Length: 112
Image (cartoon, rainbow, N blue to C red; front, side, top):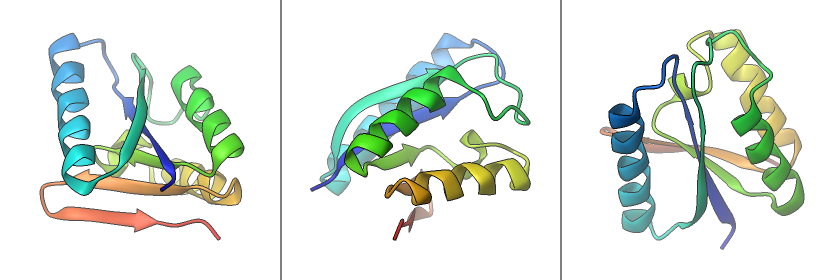
């Protein structure tokens, strides 16, 4: 089983919201039998920004292990589709995958 790293990106620093998202990712991982290693959070990040400290840490783990990146929704990658697609492509190019945990189930964008 590949390791899984959670990623949360928010435009503010609402700790109650971050904690809720953290709990949601953890519960999803447990329910799906994922090996959730750690959850990284980027606070006060605009959706258009590609350079993000938390995301850089996640990508480092993906590079080393081919990990799965678990996000609450695709919007945590970016609300801009071009930025979101670039991040997903980077994860895939490193041998990882992106999994979206949502109320309508989950989807996996696997790397090759």
